Length: 408
Image 1 (cartoon, rainbow, N blue to C red):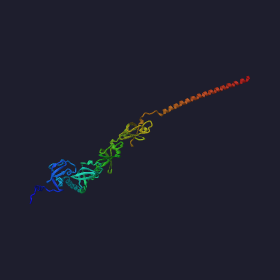
Image 2: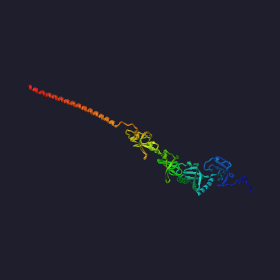
Image 3: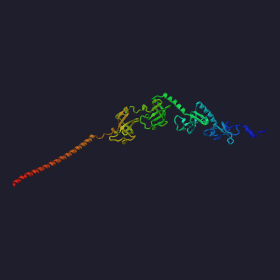
């Protein structure tokens, strides 16, 4: 029997390993992008950063010399005479067993989001990867998924097929179930008139939807203020905290209001806005027939176009502008219909009465008539005098004619 060479004896002293084998290795050197492990074989094992984790990492921050790792052999000879190892693939296999167990038992898992992928989230479950499509992330459309990065979320596994690399998670059904439970609890304890605090979820043209802790209530534009609100987006924005009271509950719909009675500007209105009271206000809006003046937050009064000035006003915009402060007198008050009428004209000094003007005109006419009459009389006197003179001359001529006859 021939003696073995030193190399043969050395080889015999090391164990034999195979591709796919799982073994223990001890870290003997660590660099940023790879680590060297003693796996009891004649060649050292190399564990690269890419085979350590799916997430890029500096290996010097997670591995130290002397650490023992359970790894999987990818290649006994990587081409450079070294053993190619993988830590993440073995972890993924173990993780897949854990995920499979959760899938079969319909167990709720909690894991961190490690990637924002095209169309969904990548979640790490003990080294294994679960994909949650964007449509299954929440019960509402999520435009920006970045807020979930590095956050731990709960979900259930709805598909498990590692061969086709289809391991799908669903968070939406948990969100829906949680909201339904919270909604049920909320409706059991709330009542009309209750004051509630909530967060504005969305703002639309006709109002704002407020999450009051289990259900959304509608704060209609007409209930945002005792005054007039033109655009809800100028009053609220998403994320605002608001304290309201429940005005109405209709099945699963909740109507909210900010018009608390103790802030009602119409309280004691009959005293504050009695006819004859002079008020100051700002022109809030205008129409063809008049201007609406805010005389107190939540109280608009009508200043009719005929009451803007003593002279004729074609349209309010000819005399007033939005935001202008005016002083006016209350000339009508209807508490039942919450209508108030104003007048600026009532505060203006009175003009000369029309009767005086007529007297002046009459006097002028009379004087003119008298003058005309005097001229007429004078003319008549002159004419009479002329006629008398003509008669006298004719008489004298007649008296002279007989004397001449006698002489003849």
